Image (cartoon, rainbow, N blue to C red):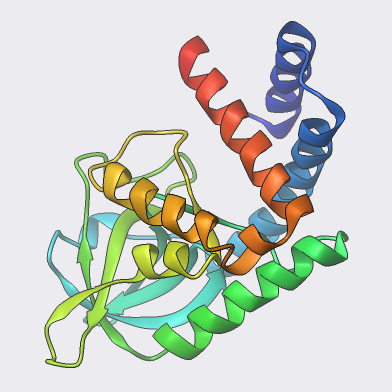
Length: 211
């Protein structure tokens, strides 16, 4: 489905449900994010997702954005879309969004780049853009791969729970997110951004109803 078709559907959705200006601003920002993400993915070119299995130990080669990394196993590389989270892009024109996108990106780079990790892959293993979907577990202090990176990003207020589609850890992630929101960590401490996130989630829930 092309971006143009998606844009038309979103416009019809806005008219039908009378979504406000805040949500419209987010949708426009999301479209810009999509274009930038596509540019980056053209460079990295997702390939060979079937070469990776549930429970594999991989190495994180690079960070593509706040919710996607490039992983490698036995000389084979592929893009991994971290399941269940959504992060702001660090290249958007909105300076407030850019700030939080950059924080998340830099944290991912410092935490994961050149590190080994264990991947947990869901039944639906590949997303719409051909990227491998999965939860990424880093080694904890005992050396066991139990440090859930997605949960960590949510707990710091660097990423939000991507509730558009259900996934195994969604209830757990939402509980962590609610606590993070109460404590006003990360972008939840910024009223403008938190309102944008709430609007985004409302759109996702409405989209679920019309699927």
